[in-house]
Length: 292
Image (cartoon, rainbow, N blue to C red):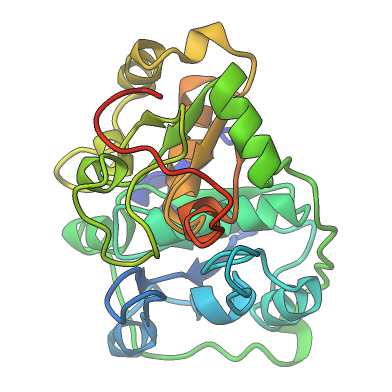
């Protein structure tokens, strides 16, 4: 796997960590719906054991701003650059040092970190394929020792937001009408059969269902690029220069963005996603299996 891939294997990471210029490791473990509309931090799991040298980053405290008012921002708005930068610098993140992010697997939270760091201007971010589970399965070491981020380990990274394009509500509506907007949630939420988290059930009219977990194999690793390309080709990606992605609150949409990049497609993400759209009474909701 070459260094331009957004993924890194456990074998490649282990070799890199043993080298002269190891990457910064960020543990992004998080359970999206464990605590209702927001989620549950993986801090306890991190404390129990993590990759040696990894720093814990709380998705909701660092990689997202507090939820906005109804119809504005959604459940996981993009982070405050000052909060993001301070947390990343404490973890040793510098502009000239590669970063590897991981979660428990299959990279839903880690993909959010990958996307946010790139949006903030970091040039070298990769996701551990298979996450903590793959690392453990390979028999590689874990520790409960928390690294010291003081002194020379403090990084110098300063976010410059906006390095990746995003959609607002109007942009999402337009792309769903005239291009390709993929809904990353489970099919039953897209169809409007259930809605456990947000004000209304359904999907953005015209959006196409593309559940995130269809990107990975049973062990939480991403499918080969050729398989991902075939998946997105069948959804119409070849017919559009840029593919839009959204989900419930802008977290798992990043997983589809990563899969699309692996497959060779350009993407744009709607951070507010369904949590923002569905809480705006002026925005219509479609239901059923139709494509809009």
